[in-house]
Length: 168
Image (cartoon, rainbow, N blue to C red):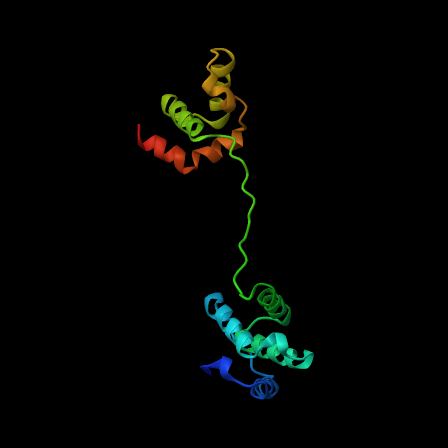
């Protein structure tokens, strides 16, 4: 059974408490963020959450957790974010970007070596690139001379390698 509720921010505290108390057995699916976060903001603003007593805040928190389909801990974090910044927005995720050791020119050079030697195995290509740098003193092979065999295969799977192969 699907229950659709409109204008949730217009409910009074008593109606929120009644809904939470009478529907303990009901569970709601988690709303998507783009729907849930504006709803949370509207309810908190309409209820003047900052001015509520501790008990009343608990009612609003339990109501939002039930309606939005988030855990109590998650709702506490979202309400804290609203209290601090007056908005509930997803946090920007900062992922670590590792520095690239091998450039697009190195990948293109590997594609050129593979084309010249008709796609030899990784260890054979590593020997060729090491010889190009150490014996023939070609500086463009310096980084590739110290590459691992497994990373040769990683570079062969990259987009830069395939675009260099198709441009031959």
